[in-house]
Figure: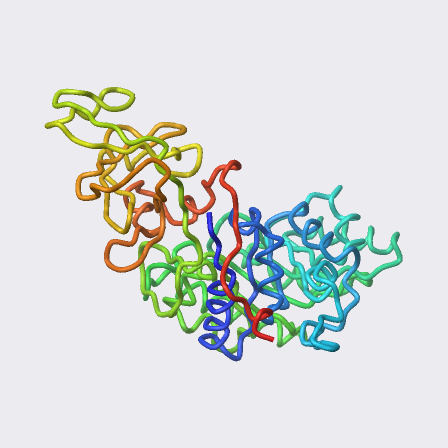
Length: 403
């Protein structure tokens, strides 16, 4: 898999321009959706990103480990731009970890709290019990824990129930060892533009902020928009909101439903090679289940990639891969390690030739969204499905190269 870090950075910059003056929280959960959190985080920091979101503690600590310790850098500064004689003053490992805020967006267990506080991770408050526990542990450690309230406005998964939010926030505000700098919520169906459910979530969240302001409680960070909302609900990144969260759009992918207002490009390409070129005869069968019978003598190629590498099983007898830019239909069932394709139209194909499984250019490009539709799933599932034996290679000219 080739990940173009220059494209990733450009996608981030276009998103920043589109949602301004909101800031962009880059969501890097699940190893940056399987693309490699270290390289992706560094590229985004170089592009100016100062806020990262993850799902759970281990992911937060991994980002913190890249910096080697607690967040102690003034976030308003720009250490990335500090240079001396054309060289970075700060080593890469320090810049990634210490120059940014790392926030757990999901839930946290009581026994995870000490490590999170020690690492300077922003913790979620989802109920009064965890708030009291974080406050107690922070006091024992002699620290102030940074927190944000997660409010459930309709996701139904995690968070303070909307009807209890004012009372709970007011109670937590009295706890001495917490710095509750932010508040956020999450959309379940923001890919449906104009949907009443999402609009009601926005209205309810804005009402909550107004009610809290009436109690003299305000927050420096207020966010509700995810990638889908950025493309479908401009209200979600207008005042009073001042931040958005995005993961999949950074990689140049969209949900299969909804609008696509961001001018972003795919940052990843999945490649393999032909491990064999064979001549089959009419009546021969291909693959498990013998689901494809060769209709006439034909030339086929065997690609060294299968569903263990992330190719959807649903491509069987349906999708196509690219050889020399030519669409080559998948024949038979995709197996764990190999995929067989027709080489009709690519007469000069030989063993060892490159095969683009995902990517390419023009109208024949194979997109993440294409695979999602074939698999009857969503793009997140596709990106997170690339196996561990798929080598991640980072390519492209980045902002750091342009200094």
